[in-house]
Structures are given as structure tokens and as C-alpha cells.
Image 1 (cartoon, helix red, strand yellow):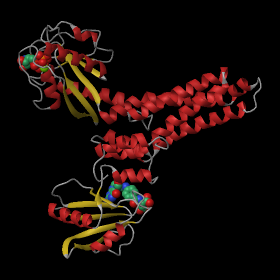
Image 2 (tube, rainbow, N blue to C red; image 1 turned 120 degrees about the vertical axis):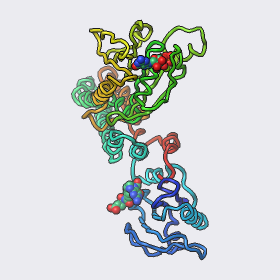
Image 3 (cartoon, rainbow, N blue to C red; image 1 turned 60 degrees about the horizontal axis):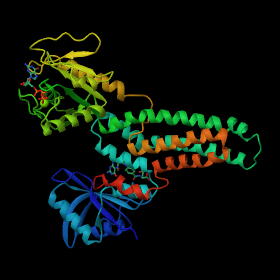
Image 4 (tube, rainbow, N blue to C red; image 1 turned 60 degrees about the vertical axis):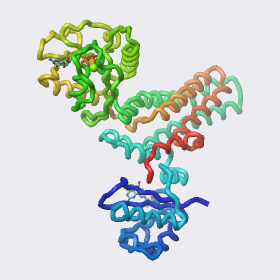
Length: 435
Ligand SMILES: Nc1nc2c(c(=O)[nH]1)N(C=O)[C@@H](CNc1ccc(C(=O)N[C@@H](CCC(=O)O)C(=O)O)cc1)CN2
Ligand SMILES: Nc1nc2c(ncn2[C@@H]2O[C@H](COP(=O)(O)OP(=O)(O)OP(=O)(O)O)[C@@H](O)[C@H]2O)c(=O)[nH]1
Ligand SMILES: [Mg+2]
């Protein structure tokens, strides 16, 4: 029999109101025992809750009889006065009545297991709670309302249609089979392959909106990278000294620019060094520069092109620092912005340039976006299967079925209609308690 679980759904600590959420078959018995036996479904009612002869609170109580609830089970919410002692007393009463505290994500896990939402929607719940930018929230809402799941389901329907056509032909083999398939299953698969490629092309964008767009400062030692880092994050996060080679570790900061999440990294100045600590710092700086979506090539007046030039890609920005000391003429062949962290000149222009770059790379009409590496890997598998199946149509149609089935399975795993056991723990472990 399923446990009846409870958890604080609001942040811990003192607050105006604290909500205890309860779900499972023992909900009605627990409500009755606390003094709220008579609640009509989904209507808030004020009740005096008590336990073991002691008043616990004057609370607003809501009852959601299953299956019409978030979890699909009998559920309830106790909207308590948000004092620590009140929450403590109510929790103790629920434990005494045989309920147990919920694990992280357990309410949403039950919603998934009861068919109230699929796995992509459950992930969207977690994303929505973690969302700190408007773009992240919009993306998570598009996934929560099932639009992303519907996209995957459409891909899967196409695959199954192609599979049915292949199987129908194979059952009546003759020399016409490849020609027939080229007319029937061929176009279905061609369309699907194009759609999957389109979804994958947008996947990096979805992941960057969710996880943050990676910007790395690179350049010679003493170029002013750490000073610029501090200016952009608006606090003295990195150590700045006149000594070349001050920064060793990569230093990351999360910030929001133009409504998008950004991870900005300060790095060690790129130079050859016999000092093993500095050499390791330079190795890490290079690795980061390669992973990032954008590199800001930081150069002070007189800096040589140096090693950084090898890491700069088309579309990166040259930032000419220390503009208060000397104004280096920007090279004619690349985009550049002159800044001074001493006077502040150029910093608003740099900020605006980054915001425009984020809007260019992260906003887009091909919604809903694929938002997670887990989804992207499965889509890549599905694409590989669809492409292999497509090739087999012409040469060995009897082989196409296996490829298409493999592709359809990969898609079913994204929404959790098959193969969930091995990933459920991973998906729900990152949730808040009470969700
Ligand atoms: N107080 C409160 N606020 C909340 C939630 C909650 O659980 N409690 N939610 C939790 O994340 C979100 C809203 N999501 C919800 C989704 C479904 C149901 C629900 O009871 N659905 C039933 C009844 C629908 C109806 O009243 O028409 C159903 O779908 O059958 C409730 C909340 C955000 N705000
Ligand atoms: N006048 C002036 N000095 C600057 C400016 N930006 C940085 N500096 C100075 O240049 C020196 C080096 O600055 P950092 O920000 O530590 O340079 P860095 O690129 O992080 O150096 P490493 O960590 O050694 O690679 C410090 O003395 C800063 O005060 C600027 O805009 N104008
Ligand atoms: Mg530095």
C-alpha cells in the first residue's frame, strides 16, 4: 500500500503563511483526526486543527480528492500561520498519525506515476521552480503544458507510420518493394529526418537558456580580465593586482543580462609558464575558451596578439581595455569595443553588445525548444535510427524495421513511456522537497 506523505511546500523558516502538502490514501483520515472532516473538494475552509488535545493552528485547509489532484491521489494542503513552532507542531501531528515526510520530488513523481504528466513535463516542473530569468520560465512553461511532449509524440507517430508501411511491404515481398517504399515510407522519413535535425539545431539554444550562456574572458596576463570581470558582475569577486599571473583558477559567476542567464568566467592570462600551478591555470583557461559560446578577447594597449588569437572564433569580440591610458586603434578587420574599468567608459556599450548577442543566439521562433542534454542524446539516437532506416529502404528494406524501432524507442524514453526505471532517480533527485 502507498505511504501517505507530507512536506512543507513553502520555503523553510518564518513567514506569513506556510503550506504543508499531504498526499496518499490516508489523507481523509488525517484531516478528520486533525479536526477537518467535512471539506468540500478544492474549496478553502478555515478550521481549528488540533492534535492530542492541543490546538495546532487556525488554518485554511484544502482537500483534493483523487484522481482530480496534482498527484492524482487524495491530497490536501494545510495553509498554516508561518511560524516555526506551528509548522513543527503540525508536522509532529502528521507523523503521529502515521504519515511520513516526502522525498525530494516525490509529489511530482507520484503525478508522473499516476499518469498526470509525462517525464518531460515533470522535468519542466523542476525547471520552472529553478527559473531565474523570464526566458527560463517561458521555456519551462512551454514544456509543462505538454507542447514539447507533443512534438516528440509527433516524431514518434511519423516513425511508427513509416514502420507500418515497411512491414506491410515486407510481408508481400516482390521486386517492387524498394520502389513502393520509395513512394510511401520514403517521404515520411525524409520529413521526419528534417524535423529531427531542426529540433536538434535548436537544442543547444534550449540548453543554453536553461543552464546559462557561457562567456569567457581570455587574454594576456595583466590585460585587465579580472578588472573587467568584477565590473561586469558588479562586485570585487576576483583578485586584481599589477602582478602578471594573478589569476590561476577559473572563476565563474552567474548573472542575468538582458533577461538571459549567463555564466561568465575569468581565466588565467595565457602564457607559457614553468610554474606548474600557473601552467595548470592556463590549461583550464584554454579548455573553457573552447567550450564557451562567446569569448571576449581582452587586450591592453601594447599587448601582443599572443596565444589568445588561436582561440578566438568568428563572432567573438575584441575588448580593448585600459582605454583611459592609451587608445589603441581597433583593427579594421574585427569588431572591437574600447573600455576602461577605471573610468567606466565603454562598459554600457559592452553590456549592450552582449545583450544583443544573447538575443540573437537565444531568442527564436522554433518553439518549443529541446532543453536538456538527456533529450538531445535521445533525439540524436532517433535521428541516427531514422537515417539508417531511410538508407535501408533502398538497399535492404527488411533491415529498416529494426532501425526504425530503435528510433521510436529512443523517443519514447524522452517522455518516459518506456525505460523509466533507470532514470527516475536521477530526474527526481534534483527536485525540492515538497514538489
Ligand atoms: N496552493 C497550490 N498552488 C499551486 C499548486 C498547488 O499544488 N497548490 N501547484 C502545484 O504545482 C501549481 C498549480 N498546479 C496544479 C495542478 C493541478 C491541480 C489540481 O488539483 N488539478 C485537478 C483539479 C483541477 C480543477 O480544479 O479544475 C485536476 O486536474 O483534476 C492543482 C494545482 C501552482 N500553484
Ligand atoms: N588604468 C587602468 N588600469 C587598469 C584597467 N583595468 C585593469 N587595470 C590594471 O591592470 C592591472 C592588471 O589588471 P587585472 O584585472 O588583474 O588583469 P588580468 O588580465 O586579470 O591579469 P592576470 O590575472 O594576471 O592574467 C591591475 O593593476 C589593474 O588595476 C583600466 O581600465 N585602466
Ligand atoms: Mg586576472
